[in-house]
Length: 111
Length: 109
Image (cartoon, rainbow over all chains, first blue to last red):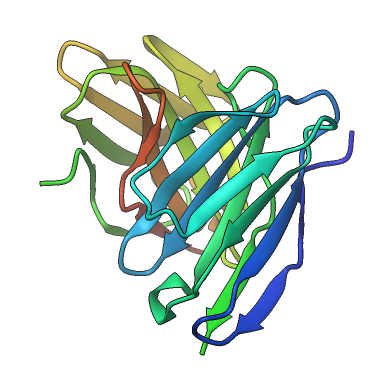
């Protein structure tokens, strides 16, 4: 089975712009979770989607949003980018939401 | 205080040594993950456990729910074990993953 894929792998944006990141889960997995990793805060949970519905949400501002499509692919959007949004964004898929398989991540740099 | 605490933060070992990484948490959980992150960012889920002990090759993970503590052991460590090991708990009522800050392990040949 192909693993979790994320696109793009690297991205440079400027403050105030918006960005959309994509995650394709392992075939058959219906749960997709998104995480942000920064040197200062470590890994933090953003949100989880299961069968096109947001099932859980972390403590991030409303500028961070996501959605999941009927084929389980998920997108994450960040609007009005701030310098502090520079991070590695990871998605992970699972069949039921338990054991998670991580993608390689999208490294976002906000200038 | 962080809800998930790992110790040590950094660990240097000689090849062949037995290694223990500890994780303590303060919230009610439904399960706990141990993750491995190599330089470059890729994360691999090593274990998910909610009770007792699991073993996979040279890796052993234990959890004591009453004491809110888990350990990850690596037997006969090897330089390829060098990575950051992250403990993450699934908060019982909400299902969110809460992460520790990670333990950076370096195994010298």
